[in-house]
Image 1 (tube, rainbow, N blue to C red):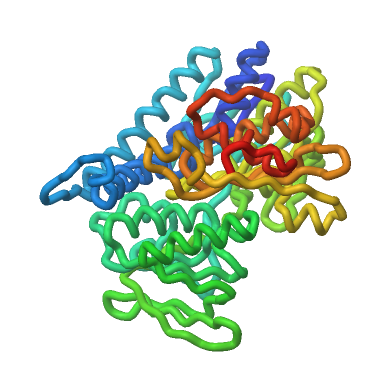
Image 2: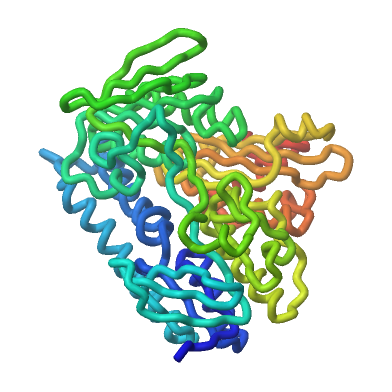
Length: 467
């Protein structure tokens, strides 16, 4: 007997499980299918467990290098690398179990297995041995199969010496040397984590700066911080070859026409991701795929086959968990007939959880100028914040970009303590089309780091009090 559902969700990551829960809330008979633990890469191998690792590094760094500032002295400070890794895995496992409970709470069926579309309405499900275990049919199918690390021939990943982010989270021993190829958020977070614990870290980035999609001033500030930590950085550098020689990986890079030979015990490939589109029966059904991602209507998330939808990393950038979740909710509500405004992809926060943290939303200063805006720029350094002084987090600044004509906030960029939390205020301000003066006139609690956003807005208009 084939079980029939109104909505079947293929993939249980932050897009898939959220879509399934919302479908259950709206009264749809729903099933979510995934061969692994719910939560996907984000919860199990990305967002959540990496933040655990980074918090460990932050605490260790604070006690080791700044303990005296707080009147704290620790003799023979040590750490257990295996316990750090174990804590990260335990947290991921616990939260994944919580997601399973949420699925049950919302009356969503859960099938563990690999799902493959056999027709527009039928999905066959297979176990790890490739044996078919079940078939289901669904009126609507949502594909949320996520993405995986992108690989290129020049960097042959063997998952032992040349690794991906997955292996970087569960190494048996702390490597003496780590080379990170790719300086986006993933590469930068691992560079910070391993550097703090004592690994000699080298970063290789093809573009002009680390975190190349961030405001240039922010990227350059982080680069200076990382160099002070002893991290070696090569920008405008292309990897020509990486090969394992004995216990090391030799890497040849080309920087501005000059070939440089480097080596490290481990090399982390962090050059991006590609959508998981293979093996799910998509091509056989004629689902349109472009550059390894499923093509969809960004208003409805429908593919070229009317009853098949796709959300999250599998449909392309921005490859962010919160985007996948938002798309899942929007997609299901659209199926229900709820009319919502399209997701504003120009107002998606981006966060990097190293220390100092980096977060941004909207236009950078350079992009705003390229688009022809006459702008006002306001900055406020955490060095001038009483709360930042009190908690010992004086590095970094808030930078806000305003349209000079109408006063509307165009973008916000933060480097410093709790930047990834503070950015939500800027995103909300942009969503509400706030002006600089509406931010200035909103009374912010004192002492808080969030006052720095108010002060940055005031600075743009020559009204800042504390600088």
